Image (cartoon, rainbow over all chains, first blue to last red; front, side, top):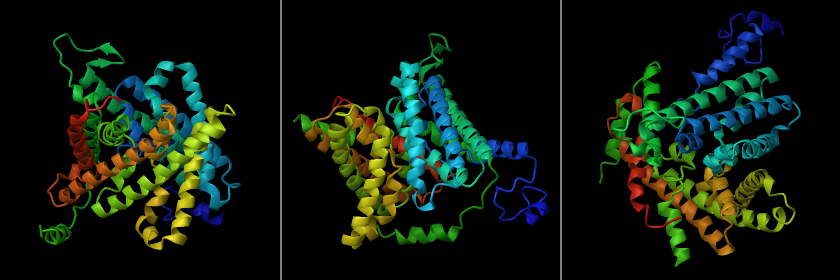
Length: 240
Length: 192
């Protein structure tokens, strides 16, 4: 505990595990929360959890439904995993996490079927498939299994919000341009002809590709790839 | 004839990646080289076929008679995880050469949504045994075809000058979009 006193700033400890809550608790929670929305946005930055993102974002309503469902599962599983983190043996942790996640998904599945049959119909197979959404298992393994409960919940909420916001952005672009509506209300006059391709599967790839590129532009620049590597590859496959 | 249509429909028309949008994480992640995509594709065909068969029997003879079909998601994901583990162990002992080729892709398959998606869709569509066998083979072959196509394209893209912002996932997604547009040409061949 002695070295915990020396780390005055959160960023200063070099390889310090996050589990040392030296700055005020609220600040740590806020950091974990914001981290999921911006720096490690699961969809736009890490390019994870693509299947539901692309398949379900045909309209704002569907995007919101999927976002809320995934946030619930993510927060719930983070909470339980963090609670049990000292009891689950390391060797069987992945199956254990999957069982926790699958239980929350089953709860969500049955709740949506009861509360909103319309949404259940629209999301279809993508509700049970939240189980294999890599964001959720990744957060259980990378964060919740190593951090106290409150931080894990903050991380779950932040990551869930980041996921929901990306879905909403994608859903809004596709619904407005591809259908001319927002939440089902027409936005433009009669003369507007929608870009139908955007609500089709192909359109989702194009829109997300563009969004990822824009998100990359907003980040600080990387070092460009060394030119020698590209040249070596070119000569290697230049045979045909 | 219907079965033939079901097969073609599953592989090309309702392609799992390009039309149903399943399995996109490995599709973007493992498609940098043709060699990797072949390894991943073969491993996926193998595991999905086994998962479909065992899932179908599990559903027919355990879940349905006891009226616990609401536990499908939980049971199937555990079944797939156990199956992947089993395949890995058997392969390492009995077929070391195959294990060296496919081994590193096997753990990734548990969280590939094509696997769980195929098994759940088979149950939702109430397929017969023969239909299940064809669907369970057609869906991963469709995944394989899409993965092979995109990795061939990406090997060429590696040599192209791409604006910095689009490098990596951006250009992969847009290429996939164009590929999906091309695959839309198949729609109308088979009704689902």
